[in-house]
Length: 433
Ligand code: ADP
Image (cartoon, rainbow, N blue to C red):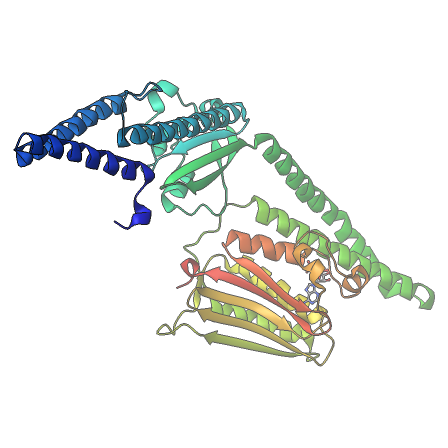
């Protein structure tokens, strides 16, 4: 032990011990038996320390401010231990009050909150959770949650352990949105909210748009028929206005068709992933259709690559052919629409280790970065005039986003004004084979 590591109290103790042993040695010398007295001195010292140890052990079993009357190093030991005990008691009190406050606030929360342990057993829940999932404090604490909430969607979600997206599912005639957040040592915090009213409102909005679009379609078809009839009989004066009316009815028709497509995407059941879509076939179909519509105004190229090592036959995607075709075709139509004549457009598919990227790269007008996050909103256009002029509806990218959401895919947009844009759909590995 180096001198600087010797505490003052130990130094005092050593001085005390030396003085005591010296005293015993003097008595021993007077009595002519120094060794015996030194031995007795040591023995007394050991017994005294054992006695103090026993006192300490009793005090530790029930610590209090009242410490035993001791001298020497023991006084210091009691002082330090008591300080430690006080600090610990203070932080325990603080922690208890935080916990109490947390429990009180979660009790008052309108959101259902449940805490699960590593085995998915319920450790705690608030009154809102009890009401929403019909849980009972006395019986259900310690039960596995999937024994109590048996909705297959919830059970799958829990077992899959992929909690990036919230889960919407029906419980007791209510529609619930639920989030699971892992925390601590393998525990989970579930928070759930009743969205029945919101969902009904959303259904009403969707039904309204769908019904209105269907209702508008019939008179529009009649009007288009009459306009075509009148165009045949048109003279020089009426030719131009009739052509304008014709173009507007075509545009309205396109808007109505896309609104109906969107409503269908929103209301139809989940995609049947047992369907297999051959990537080469779907991209070839879109490419051929786009080339014939484009009539050689652009250099359109189809590139299918496989960057994944040791896996050269990944050409199938699980999902709906019609929906995917609609999405990719929208991207290619946009590229044609927003790329000046004579420039390049690439329709590409790249298989890599983490999935497959399918998209369109153009060398067109590009998009300023502040518009990019809003492009998939309905009727959002960067340049309304240009979109209209090119026959755009403002719904194409909203459709793409919906289709990709239904296929667990994401849309990445890279663009530079004046240089071009890349719209890339990233499909996860789980959706390809
Ligand atoms: P629109 O029918 O107007 O093309 P979209 O929803 O397909 O509607 O696209 C929304 C907007 O995004 C477009 O109005 C356009 O401004 C912009 N946009 C889409 N694709 C491209 C592209 N390839 N190049 C430049 N701008 C694009």
